Image 1: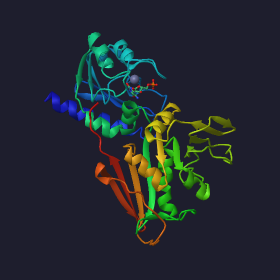
Image 2: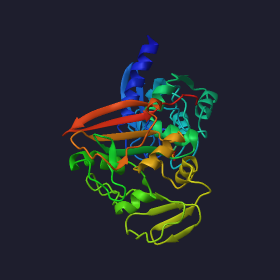
Image 3: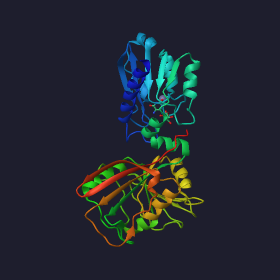
Image 4: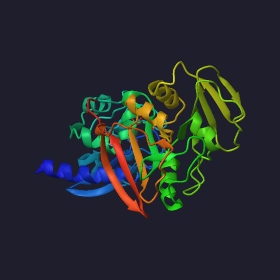
Length: 347
Ligand code: AOF
Ligand code: ZN
């Protein structure tokens, strides 16, 4: 009976966590619920990067402190126990006098992972871990990759004609309609940067912003072995050229030298720059290199089923058996398929 209640309330925590999607940057999606005498009396979630954690949001409305002694706090993720951008949630839980906590799973962040629960137990607070690790990874895939692989989460995107071409060699071809581009711009807006290879950049110096969705300007990352010259600085959008020779800054353009253009090294560098999610928009060779290195964490394929190009640059040859198709929809003769790389939950 108690187990059923735990699962039921935890389901609500996961539902609440979803409300923060797209807004928490490098932080996880987390939901929390306070139960007193078999009733939910307060709810909270992590709604913005740098803002209140789910527990804080949930507990801040409780004015009658006497009930906390007999209440149970459910959190989709183990509470943090360090001072980050916000104070430790374990301290808050202890100081509020809560005696029982149920969590969905441990935190993937090595600074927390198990320490939060250990601290609570040592403080005399009863803790139950429902061990919903796979569910946690599905909810917080980006956070999981950032924390366990110490690199950016890479989300690929390409648009193709019905016969499998993404465009011409030196000029960009319009494949999708603006209505479909709106959804792509939404993902750009939720990404910290957009990465392209040198050829894609030179083909038509794309704007790489999210204008159809909002005014956000994700950073632009361009890959090239030799440092690129003649990159025109953009006043409101930083451009980073990852290359093998030069570190340099000029206005809003940064050249950063790497030892290799291996996706793993790229991912480590970009995460260290605070780029948690990076959209990889091409071309095909770049997407294939990320796939080969097991660094293409997800990708979106949009096909215009009315367009036949007959020649041009072929769509990337991605090893699809390594991915799960998680979502698809059609809009005006175009179909979009969302894939996520399969993950072994060895946390
Ligand atoms: C929680 N509840 O709602 C979240 C947690 O810099 P800070 O202070 O925001 O801390 C970020 C870390 O805290 C993050 O890496 C993760 O380990 C944890 N996130 N923890 O107890 C929350 N968002
Ligand atoms: Zn916290």
